[in-house]
Image (tube, rainbow, N blue to C red):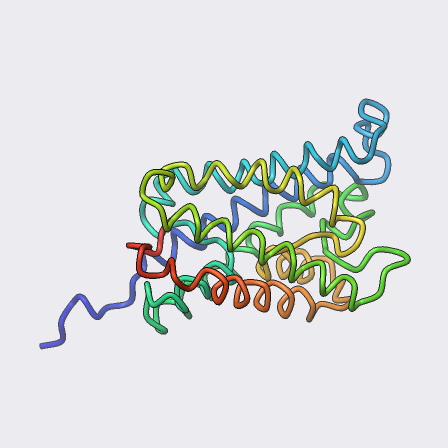
Length: 241
């Protein structure tokens, strides 16, 4: 008889799906509220950079809360194909499981973005949070920005996971990190660092401008970070944040 342990890992699949859906639903709702045309937040907080700092902190904080939730305890809350690729390259998960995680993340991204249609014109004004190169910046500048920001994120992730004394604080890096990176990078690429984060609103809005850089940039950045932190791979004990 077939071993039941070889059955499809539905719990992991649904944990990643739910985690990614929640990240996009909450995170992109924050983006729409802060930057949608006609939002009262522009009058309440007129400084765009301050709104970017706040949005980055809350977006990163959402990811951190998911990581320490029951979802994170179940699947590790990768909620990002670049993170899953990192754990796969570090040989902390096999290829089949990595593919399942990425499929769950992409499906979850679309599911989490669909309710954003309820924002109506406010959401439509910024394509429901779709990422595109900013005005005055080339595709190649946006691509480089995605490489650098994802490299930074994955390198810090590997460093925190690689040392036992700071490992419990790993989720805490995301609010602070994105509070710094968003105001620096948002105007250039829209800052994704996560192919699933860009995929969801692209599907819902139909905004596919330079879509490929939001795959190529984060994956290249994650790959470079894996090379840079390769000596820490043996220190990482599990594919979890």
